[in-house]
Each structure stands twice: as structure tokens, then as C-alpha cells.
Image 1: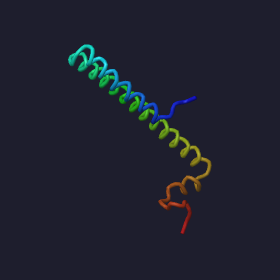
Image 2: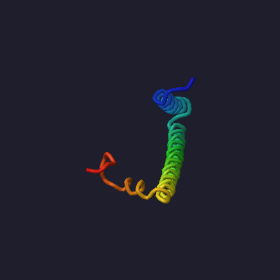
Image 3: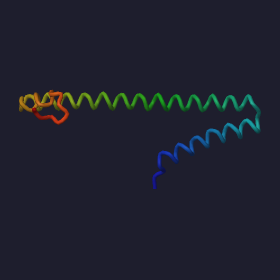
Length: 93
């Protein structure tokens, strides 16, 4: 069974806030501040990692679209010209 994204987000936020409250209550504000800094670093590294994977996927997708258009353009020039029209339906008048 897979956890839904909203449930996973809720559990992660609960774990982060719970760990901050637990460490702060037992060890004081200094340790609580260190836990906050730790979670900030973890979140920033995950955001950076997801941003890099998104940009790689988009650049790969753009590259495959261009190669597909070039290969179909070589075989059927009329088809490649039809994709250059600005009409939303793809047809003529």
C-alpha cells in the first residue's frame, strides 16, 4: 500500500516539529536550534535535488521532441509544416 502525498507531507511536518519540540524540551534551546538548522539543511538539499532532476527531465524531453520533429520532417515535409501553424486546432481556415 502506498501513502498518499498529502499524508506523507503531514507525517513529515509532524516528525520535524515533533523532533524539534522533543530535543528542545530535553536539551534546551541550543540543541533545538541545532535541530532546526539540521532540518533546514535537509529540506534545502532535497529541494535542490528535486530541482536538478526536474531540469534534467525537461531538457531530455525537449531533446527527444526536437529529434522526433526532425526525423518526421525528413520523411514527410507537409507534416512538419503543419506543426508550425499557430492555430489551436492544427487545421486550416
